[in-house]
Amino acid sequence: MSLKNDAFPSSGAFDTISSSLADAAERKDAIKKGGAVFAFTLKNAQGETDSWYIDLKETGTVGKGTGPEGKKVDVTLSLSDDDFTKLVCGKANAQRLFMSGKLKVKGDVMKATKAEPILKKAGIKVKL
Image 1 (cartoon, rainbow, N blue to C red):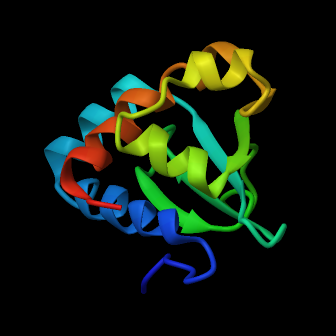
Image 2 (image 1 turned 30 degrees about the horizontal axis):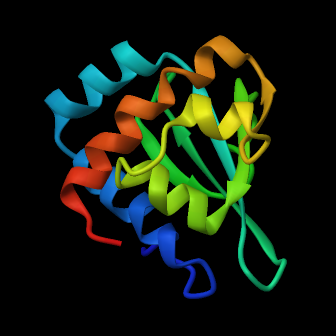
């Protein structure tokens, strides 16, 4: 099942992340490095918002919504669809986006820093 939402061009990255986590070794490594459930709330140019999550605490799965059912999200990252594209493609730095107010973090800020390497791995495999 595709996680892509056509109103959010960067959402294709979640399919790519999901594909990379299908490999057992990649998934185990990502869970070891991530150790958290990350939620992403993106806002597109029309002002609409949508959410996805990456569970790198237990299952190594990616899904649509604000988090896996019955589980607590460790950190929620809110940013524009355009800035998410730049972040995944390595054209933007999460710290700079945060400092400039373009990336809002709710929850454990230290865990938020662990999301960037996972996103950059997806950016290598996807051209947005």
